[in-house]
Image (cartoon, rainbow, N blue to C red; front, side, top):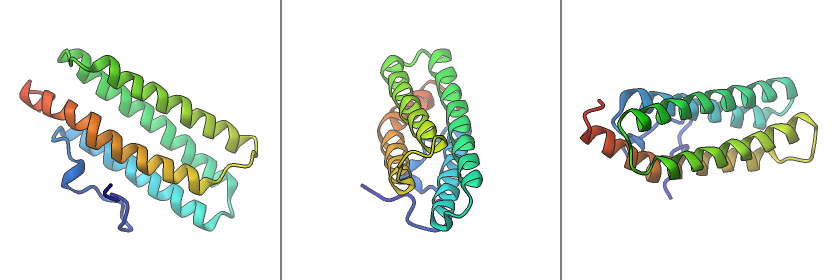
Length: 141
């Protein structure tokens, strides 16, 4: 698997572009938030900062999912149900992480960052790429 987060800016490369401007822009913002979380994990001195970044990441990812799901519904994407289930599973997982972090449970922030990186790269390269091809063919640009 390609590491889209190898460089310091966590910028997206061509392999992660779905060619829907709004979605690509949102993906970049999500990558930036993950990068901030990783940086906060490395300094690890401010729990409130880390919790704030986690909250922002969760909120923005949910906003992003609504954007994608709006496109799916508007253009009648045939794999919408499966794609939406992927979003639901992600929501459950990150809300569990958030609760554990908030409660001070023994959660490795490094493991959370690794999960987020892997999940987003895989999801974009597989599910969102399929959606992007469909939307481009449907004229959603």
